[in-house]
Length: 395
Image (cartoon, rainbow, N blue to C red; front, side, top):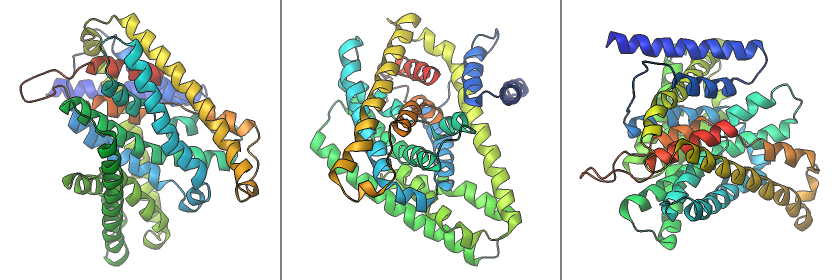
């Protein structure tokens, strides 16, 4: 036990040193975290790690999504709702569908359901990575708002695609009509659960005698409470977390009035999210040797080739989607023409800011090891995780 704790602390310390080095030489730290996760896997003596996929999903996803919602301005989000919705829903479904059909056609043994599973994993870009890279480049606030709003909602939509694809792989059946109806039901009721839970937390923060420490602790608990409450009723925990985060953020000026409370929460959440980002990449670094060994009939170079092809596909798809949705609404709607013209520079920035990151990684790691209680291995799990890692590295 002591050896394991010391090993984890040593790995985290190494990652933190790399982040400080990245800041020193003015390189975005997500790049260094990817390199750290890759480099750790080659260190002699690093043990193989096998963590429960459901625990990974539960521990990392709720706070990451909640934090993204917390720092999203509801006013700006609503102002740019059209491009955000077209990217967060339209592009996610477009990307997932194209990736599903492409991968099922050129990867041996890959079914359409597995293709949708991979598409759901790699379709959402990472706002943290994009914001870090674009920081200090003079990018207009409008573009940053669209990118952050897209990342917030597309995490929810892509994870719902992931859930349905996962169910299709496990059960072996899929009905588009039934899935569509279930999508709206699961997503809609997830929003309801998020709003109800957020109102309860609002009342606690607003009317009970909390302290800065209690307020900070409650905000850390909130995403887990919202997620588990929704999942308990088989609704979307992701939509519940995103909705609750947006609501609490919108009303934050009413419930977190003192400077000490805001400073305390900022410190807690900055540290928590930074450590979680680092830990996820450390975990993939630790699991990478085992993933490579378990590729089965696929070689490492085949995995890299598939990952490179998928990366090229999703990069091209983003360009193919962004430019039409930036200009076509302006041709069709007088109201859309009242917004500033996107020109060509804005769409290029948004198209090129499709970096995949920690949410994709955590989602891939959450794929179960087995299909059923009989010990049937989940098909292509290691290949999907490996392709996800390559896509994150390339983008």
